[in-house]
Image (cartoon, rainbow, N blue to C red):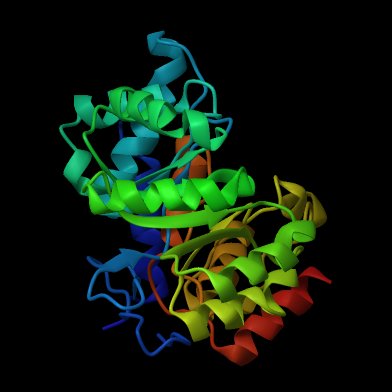
Length: 307
């Protein structure tokens, strides 16, 4: 049964101290104390937790213990509370792939995450880039391989399909992070068979609701959401504003959890992948995977609270 507010707050407090319901989609599994809400990858029986983790900027650190200590704690929290969550990275994120690979290897946890990365090379260099990525990630294969920001997307999708046939990736997809790419993304969704779309979507950037999210539902494409906080701008918009009293009705105790639950309660969304290097923020993000999810009326209420 869904957790109550007191239990939810206890979970959040426990995470913060860690050392290291009604959902819109019929495919969603209700969250409990021990099980976060999950969504099926369309066309499969595989389910993913609705909250995962990105690594852009946050995992681009060196080998020093001071640099990596908070990231170790962030990864530990994810592994302990939400196994098989999406961990999304890219070769263009500096050292993020190497750091991700090192942390997963140290925790013996490669099989405990849904590992996603990208190709960001022209097609002539894609195979070599992905070979290096697998070395950095300490993994012979990944769960999801994506064409980053539509770079050389026609030829790269062809190569990704070949890598999928070879067992180097289980799923393939495309990504972008700007509204001005949405029309092209929609064209690709209509013309190509892909498994995942990764796209920007938040209370401050809702353009994906117009075409992309309905199209993904229609075409059976899973959706990962980047920029869920619009690079922190959403928090700036509510600075000094108390969290609404009614937030507890959907098991939220922070603006961040409201922002994330607004996203993952959309029926087309498979998972949101917020990035952070701060354990406190990670604990807060993870809380959005548990408890009751907002329905249509409550989603509108969250949006109105930001206005």
